[in-house]
Image 1 (cartoon, rainbow, N blue to C red):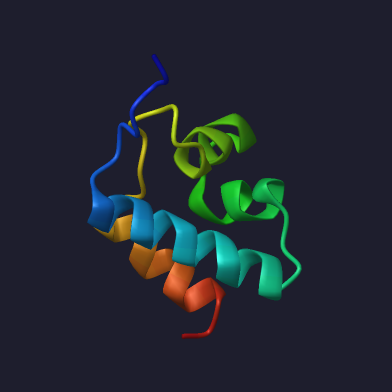
Image 2: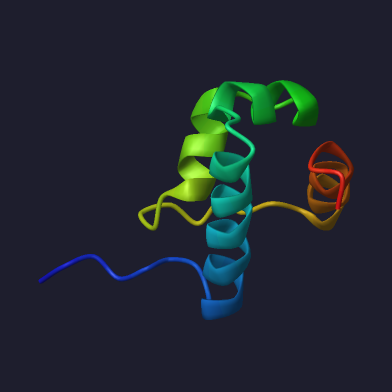
Amino acid sequence: MGRANLKSKIDWYIVSRVREIRLEKKMSQEEIAVHLGISRGFVGHIESPNFVAKYSTVQLNKLAKVFKL
């Protein structure tokens, strides 16, 4: 049996949208990690459906500023 997505639909939508914007801006996971003060591995966990990790509202606010949104 396959592993279920550990994030809710809304969490997965937010993570996917942040990833899309990150790629549009040609930013690496490492660059995002530096801006947020977290490890690149943690960003990888956030972007993976196999982990429960997700962005906090504080981190999303920082990302909005980084992305100039």
